[in-house]
Amino acid sequence: MSFLQRVLTTVLHVFYSVVDGFSYKDAVSRYAPEMPFLTIDMLVARAEIWLVETDHILDYPRPSMPNVKLIGGTVTGPGKPLPPQFKSFMDDAKEGVVIVSFGSYVLSPPEPITQKIISVLQDLPFKSVFRSNISSPNSKKILTSSWIPQNDLLAHPNTRVFVSHCGEICILSYDYFHHEHVVFEEESNV
Image 1: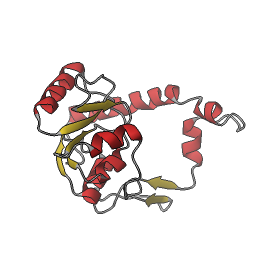
Image 2: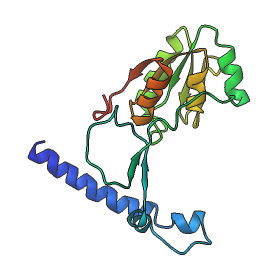
Image 3: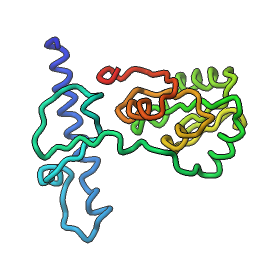
Image 4: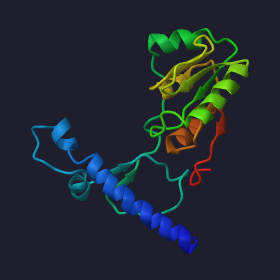
C-alpha cells in the first residue's frame, strides 16, 4: 500500500466513524425505547460475541479474538415460496431469468449506468429481475423492485445468471446455488 493509499484509508476510516456516529446515534431509542440510551459505539464496545457472516474458506486469513465466530452461509439455503409478484414472473420465464443485484448498500447504480444495464437486459433473450428503485420500461421483460428475495429467486429453477457486485453474501450464494455469474468486482472479494 502506498503512502497516498494509507492516507486515503485513514481519512475514510475517520469519515465513516463520524458519519456512522450521527447516522445511528438514536437507533436503540428508536427501535427499543424501553431500553436505556446506548449509542452504537457503546453497544459495540459491550458486545460479548461477534457473529460474522463470512466463511474462513472463502475469506482472507486474518487474526480474530476468541469472541468472534465466523458463521458464513447462514443467509443461503433452500428457497422459500416466492411472493406472488415474483412467483408468477419467474414461473412464466421458461427461457430463464437473470437476477441483478448490487448488494444491500446500493439500491441503484448511478442513472447512466442503470440505463445501460436496462438497455442490455432488454436485449437479452431472458427475463430479468433488477433490484433497483427505478420503474421498469417493460415490466413483462424486466421486473424492478427496491427489495428482492434474493435467496429465493436464486433457488428458483428458471434462474440462469446472477449479476452482482461480488460482495460476501453474493460469493456465498454463488457457492451454494452454482449459477453462472457476472460480477462488478469488489476488490477484496474477486
